[in-house]
Length: 89
Picture 1: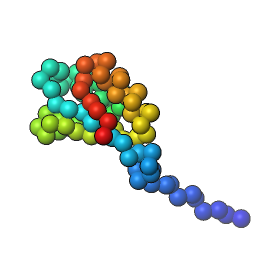
Picture 2 (picture 1 turned 30 degrees about the vertical axis):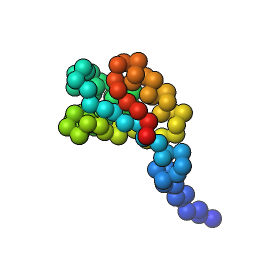
Picture 3 (picture 1 turned 45 degrees about the vertical axis):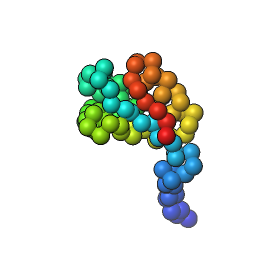
């Protein structure tokens, strides 16, 4: 008997992923430092990290990660310890 593959659930619409970590522009940190931090902490590829840094610079903020609140709180602490301004929305 052949079974059909299970459908992946859309986790983005689940309540656990309704929180976002948002990066804010600042005049203190360099683009390179922000990009390096996004790659290390959020596991962004360098291109994605660069785009987030540019968006935050020109728009004032950029959503960098979605997830459950506990996960995002830990990420937030890591960014803050690096002197990078983020918040959970």
